[in-house]
Image (cartoon, rainbow, N blue to C red; front, side, top):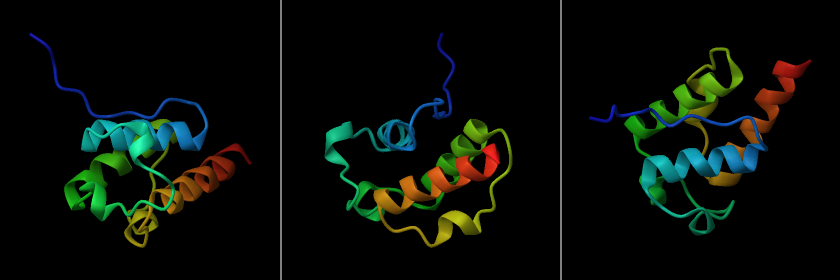
Length: 91
């Protein structure tokens, strides 16, 4: 019997991490999600956004305000946010 897991980010580049989580949530292949892809087109609804937020928090090891994700529209914006959050965590 396998236990369902929440998608988690691995400590790699923001691009790879975000794609892995999006792939886990949407079931889509990595090359199907260019930076210009709209999150809503990928099926990222409010529940999936919360899963993504939890995965980002797990990756960073700290809480992230939900407001940080609310204004995001594209995969590229999400990648930029993750990069900025990682930079903050390292400083």
